[in-house]
Image (cartoon, rainbow, N blue to C red; front, side, top):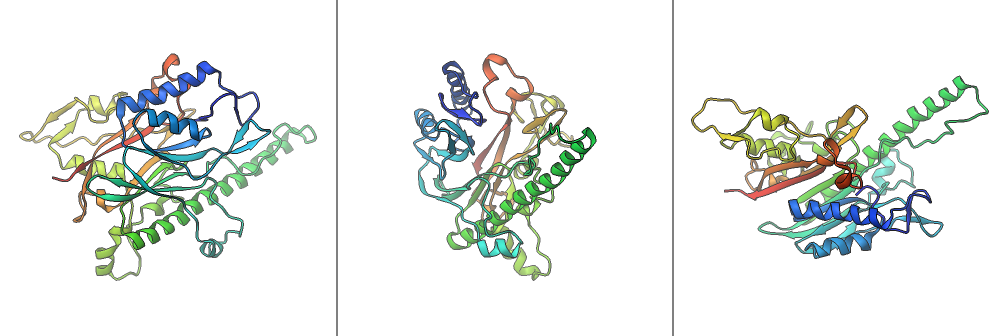
Length: 360
């Protein structure tokens, strides 16, 4: 949501306050996205004004909304530490903040004061056909170094100042990595325990602040076990694993009779598969695999930081699945082809949307 805070409140610093016109434009951008794409369940990050967001989405047909935390307020009107939230067109029957296993955290070498940098929301949503589904919304720790130094310390010589900044970046960056990886690990343990207790499908969505393939978070996609009995692992493991919705989409796409043209693959259009498809039932042409669009840009670099992970009920290759991922969309027009009047108060991330279709 990129600093969703209703004026006259300020985000982080006293002068950062939206005007009435800016606030209206920011809200209009959100409404335009919801109108165009009409998602059924939405996870939000960087929410300051919880009641305002609830009112906004309720007007768009989302009668179910939840948050499990409140932002920090200093000096009565300056807000810090935004929270996550969820909105749904289907009933939310249970809401909780995920609590980590403190004994396990200690075993991992974390101190007794460890907490998630942002509370993780678990909402049980009653989805069509599949029933109660546990939807988790996260905003893992950013890569911003945890150690702050005065970058313009006049008491130090220029070289010594650079050395101090370098040390703070190296150590502080690793501290953020430890926090982010620990958050993902402790969350995954709680998700597995919840799955064992309820047998309910799982959806994990949000800003991971990291490439999922990076070793820091790759354990979220663990699908093999060392030393475990092979038959038992094959029988039971898949039920407790998560899958990247992009991978499930590609799997479903490769099993269809359509191929994405080069034009569609390289296009800046929001749709990954749109009208730029041709039928290849009678053509011996290998399928072109779509390129995954980044969700974040920083200077000349880009990366995928935002994900939707799904349990086996959404994997068409799993015998007991209900759905398959038939569509995957990264809404990034505001990032790669922005128009000031439309996009200057939008968000600095691409919006990931997956479409689930009942298996035929």
